[in-house]
Structure formats: structure tokens, C-alpha cells
Image 1: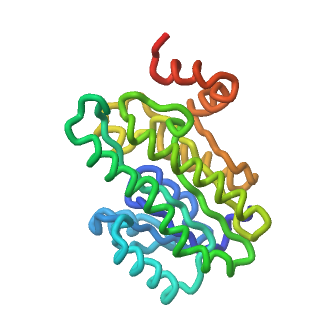
Image 2 (image 1 turned 90 degrees about the vertical axis):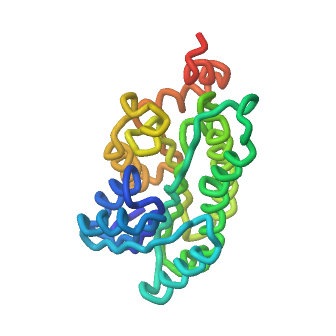
Image 3 (image 1 turned 60 degrees about the vertical axis):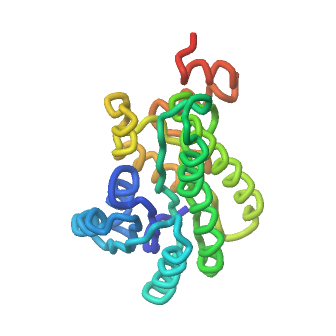
Length: 246
């Protein structure tokens, strides 16, 4: 698809993959970045061309309604929705005393928030000559990573939703993409203790842009490409490789 002269909403746009994607797309598009931290969002927007920041907690229905209303009233249209915001926790499902609370929070941000944003913004996207939805999942949507078990669950749920949505919208103006990054050098990865092993968010953003421009609806990037290809050969081997089980 053509990624120029479009209005694009990126959740989690204040840092990491979201910020680098906004940076890459801002020269030729109008960008809206959304997130919880107003200070971070404003700082990010000040560094980018054609970019505005809207503070919104995407797990809060009132905030989502306000975000959608502002997009409709101030900008009039939206061509691309990039559901990028995500949270994750390292724990063991058989040992954690609050696994339910952890999983609930992860699913609210990683699964239910994208689902609700799509629901609210589909009428706007349908009005465009060409539109796209990008859901950022992960290679752990293919096979779970044991150190982030319920995060893996939430991304798998988002992957299935993305596949269903793509099928339902296949004869419309809306294209549905899935970005499957591996470990990335972001704040989330640092919190999980894995930053030194990640790829740069710049590489992920570049991979996303290439996938959009070539209509590659499933977009693995970096080391994730090998795991993605390996998964379809042997899911058992992919699980072992990701978790280094030998």
C-alpha cells in the first residue's frame, strides 16, 4: 500500500518501536501518537515532523472515547491504526501469587485495547480510499517464551484476532497487518532484563514500513524471521529454540 499523505495513529508512540515508527513515517504523513505519559509524548512529538500527541490510557473506555472523538473532530479522517502499546511481566504461572492480576493487566493492554480501538475506528477507516490496521504482536505469539508466559498468551490472542479480522476485511479497503518482532531494545525489554540481546526499534520500524509497502501481511523482523520460518516447519523445535531447551 501507499504510505504517504495519510493520517496515522500509533499507540505507545512515546518511545521504542512506536516512536521510531512515527519518526520514519512523519516526513510524508500526519502522525498522532497516543499513550499514558503526557510528558514523554510531548517530548517525542517535539522531535518529529507533522506529529501531535494525545494523552490517553487505551485500557480506559472514557479515554478511548475521547481519543476517537478528538481524531474525528480535529483531524476528520484516519487511514492507518498501529496498535503498538504493550506491557509484559516475567513470572511463573505455577508460582506467582497474583498470576490472574498480571494476566488481566497484560490482556487489557495487549489484546482488549487493540480490539476496542479497532471497533471504535473501523467506521472512520472504512471511509478512506485505502486504509490499514497494524497489530504489533511478537514472535512469542507463535510459541510461548517461558519467562513471559501470560504476555505470550496475550500476544497469541492478538495474533488470532488479527488473522480473523484480516479474513473478514479481505474484500474491503482495509488491509490488516501483523508485525512480529523478536526481543527489541525497548523500556519493556529492559525491565525484563533482556535489552542486551535485543534488536533496535529502528530495525523493527524499517521492517514494518517495508512490509506495508509490499503488502506483506505478516511481518517478522530481525532474528524473528528465523523463528517465524522455523515455527511452520516444527512448532516443537521453535519452542525449544526460543526457550533454549536443547
